[in-house]
Length: 499
Ligand code: NAD
Image 1 (tube, helix red, strand yellow):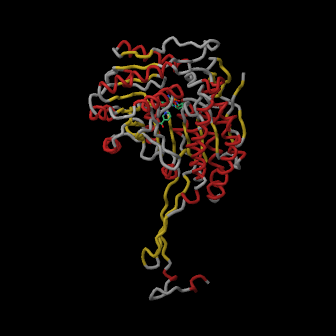
Image 2: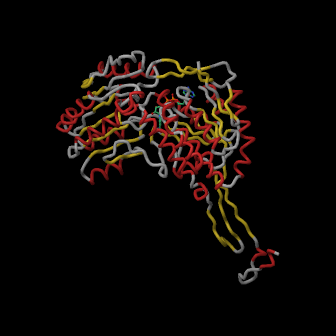
Image 3: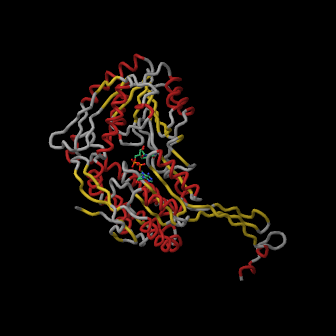
């Protein structure tokens, strides 16, 4: 059995806690590795050696730090296929999707190459007589990232890139379900020239997360995962005086107006609802057609498209639209929610229950489901299913559709499909959701914008990547300096002051 490690002080290190978690191949259901679960003592030791290494890294000029990012970009591109293969093997997503996962993370590392410019401070010349004022952004020290299973390359890269290039040491606690890619990324940054101890990967579960939350040296925590854990980490981290940002779950609505191109909308729903088996925080899980006629036509277009979806292992390459879900527990949870949908009165327009794939009977595959006539009181509407299940809630008007998305507790992403500019503009302005698509089903902002949800999808006031990430991983110091001897009466420069 392959025993995975932690990555501490520039090398792979075996776990010493004696506790391990199974890492599955979701396509076969087999355990393919064991990942060590760090104890509090292991986590604290990793933080202590990161703290010892960090001041020298913070004192390295930003351009040199940016060069490490530049080298990492080259190495990630070099290893793209290797990373994507390891990712698919542990996560289950298709090879093309896995490459997308790495690519969207890579784009943030490319953005980080601009650190010398992004870290430049402000300067006010002659704020008073002989007085100048300037501000600088300084690293926080040791910071940590706690990341989910569903983007094991992208989200660790979103966290580590800005944290590192700003001069911090970074402790990554990746998901215990697919830990290999984060370990490979740590090797890559090492090869790119990152000093030992500046990027530590500590594998683990609640014990190591709690150790991060309670460690006095850790200055800031960036978390991505489900809302109950996001809320827990935010409150305990803040109570311990840390800077914390947490991004949680989602229930993303797509509104389809009667004037929308319904073929385009149906195609968009297939990709956004079922891609990566629905295990995306930006997946569309609720379609809201406006008007009965729009709803009937949309359902008619969706059914054959959903029935044509090919579900299989990543090894089948382009023949597969989506793969298995991550664990047997995730599969069981999705199946249980589907049963509640039926029991609570929704119409199962496409029934993916009982899906099985020859040769992969033990894999965690879930067939695609489409629910129609879903109502807001049903569990399948209220809860995040995180699987290949699309719910349709029929709305009588635009205002009713808007109200549904507004009233849902989650506020990560949303989309509207329409040909009417006025409606699109009104939607973008009034909706209380962080990321909005207009005829774009998955509006994930690019690296130089920022990513973050509202309501129960985001805790804390700064987003991920873009300029917000540089603010999150630094603090501002403002200096007011007075050199009265530098000025002669009348304001002429006195060169003697510099003799
Ligand atoms: P999760 O909350 O189960 O786990 C996330 C991290 O928290 C992991 O590292 C895990 O080890 C740790 N963790 C789990 N239970 C814990 C506990 N009791 N105490 C302390 N730490 C704990 O999430 P997941 O299943 O890995 O990921 C899927 C979730 O992440 C979905 O809800 C999805 O919407 C969300 N997500 C959100 C975004 C976003 O940007 N908003 C992006 C991706 C995923």
